[in-house]
Length: 93
Length: 93
Image 1 (cartoon, chains in turn brown, yellow):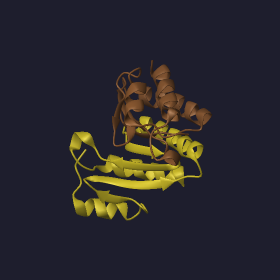
Image 2 (tube, rainbow over the protein chains, first blue to last red; image 1 turned 60 degrees about the horizontal axis):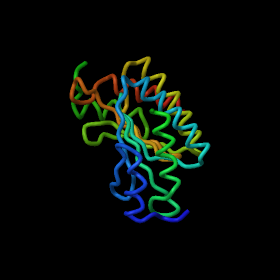
Image 3 (cartoon, rainbow over the protein chains, first blue to last red; image 1 turned 135 degrees about the horizontal axis):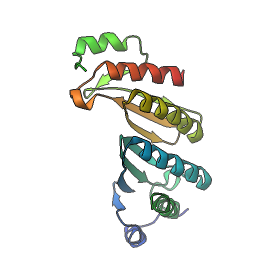
């Protein structure tokens, strides 16, 4: 997996509303109705992560969820992160 | 729920190995075999949180999980946090 440069990342996340590049990760925060809804969505995302064999850095506090993606092996952002972000958008939809 | 003072907190977490007081929260980090095991444990904890109506600030990266507990309404640590930490220890056990 090839590490993307800043231009490539910015171009790729144009189609991912709310996602931003920060600290060499792409990130987005989500707010849900309550904890149950937040965790149910996390569970759905967790299965997708296993399927893609790619895992987030994510933090949850009650109804809020912040997801940060990067590719450890490439020491940066790769297409795997863009693909997972797209899947997350489809899940949260 | 009464906010506990530092002495009370230190006394209470004596029986909770690995839990430490930091930034007005009690926290502990756990390491699991892989993401699936980490997330399965989170799911178990999530149900307990709903039951106790008390929710963590928690962060997961692959097989690692960091849990921070405090009581928002009391602006500090209360017995609710100690109780939830005990339940988490029983779950992770």
